[in-house]
Length: 249
Image (cartoon, rainbow, N blue to C red):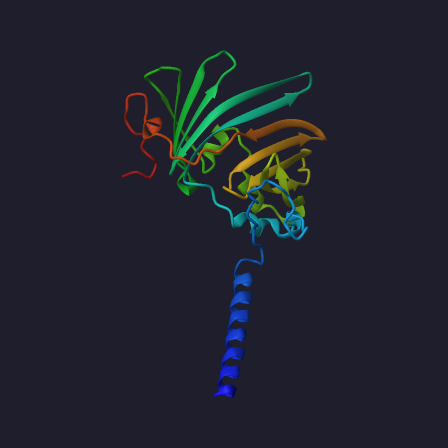
């Protein structure tokens, strides 16, 4: 019986090792660590959390694929643009529920632009635009990234389509207390460089920059993300009707 017991234990160890190895192969060997609750970067063993996972230009694309955006959330977004001799900014309140996005943007003249976007993906999106308390709206059609474009965001998923050689730098960083995957692109033919900070907690773009020949021309900053589902009334048109998605029957 002792020989049988020893043999069974040895077989069990082999099976566990094989399963663990297979799991690492299935995920590409990339496991994103959870942000520590205390907000510090050191664990009890003295290891730096930046060393827990190695993200490089060669591994950042599989790492980003492990992330997914939440189905419902709301937050404020600040977009700043810079040009020779001046700058400008816009603040938007963004609410998302399933396939619908609402963006309320305070404009320089004091008015508020409302945009309601439905759909996306390969079928495209339908958007309604109105201002302040208007009862009428204009319908527009957009592509798969219509909601990001309406919010003036850099769509970080574009990194997944880049050749590895076009990714200049990548890593796992803390930015203002938020743990992010960081990606920097090489300069494109026009001289533009993009930088992304993507939250590993919720898969949302947390910050972004775009520069031209070393000069900052665009900066995106997200506020605190509220995970509670937004009110359903936010996703209705001014007359109380729903915006039909492009693929609706």
